[in-house]
Image 1 (cartoon, helix red, strand yellow):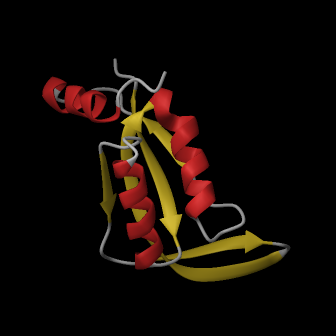
Image 2: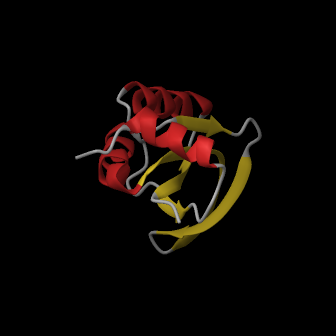
Length: 109
C-alpha cells in the first residue's frame, strides 16, 4: 500500500501546462509532471451551457501529504475558474520508484 498519488489536471494550453509543471517540481511538490503532447477534446457543462475545448493533460506524481499544496499552486497558476484537480491513489508500484517520489517531494509536514 502506498501514500503516493497521481494528480490529473487539464490545462488550456501547452504554455500553462509547462508553467504549472515547472513550478510544482521546483517547489518539491511533485517528483515528476508528465505533459501529454497530444491535445484532448473535452465536452462539458459550464454555466448552464454545453461547451467544448481543446486541452492538455498533465499527470503529477506526488504524495497524499503534498496534495493540498499541489492543489493550491495549481489553482494559483491555472487560468480556469474551476480547474480539474483529481487525485488517484497509487495502489502499488515499484518500491524504488515509490521511494524516489517520496525522496523528491519530502513528507510535506
